[in-house]
Length: 64
Image (spheres, rainbow, N blue to C red):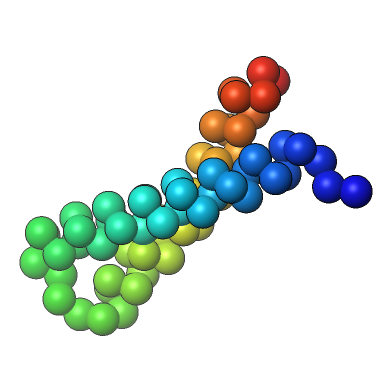
């Protein structure tokens, strides 16, 4: 059985993870990074950081 917190985390992760990935790619492009792998790395880092951020946002919304 899935908990309501997990559903909220996954919903927020789709939004927060893609937003952080996009922001980090734009920051990399503004700083002059033009290689494929550094941009993929920036996007991956955004998705990885998005998971704990989503967890904390969901916990705050659930009141815990």
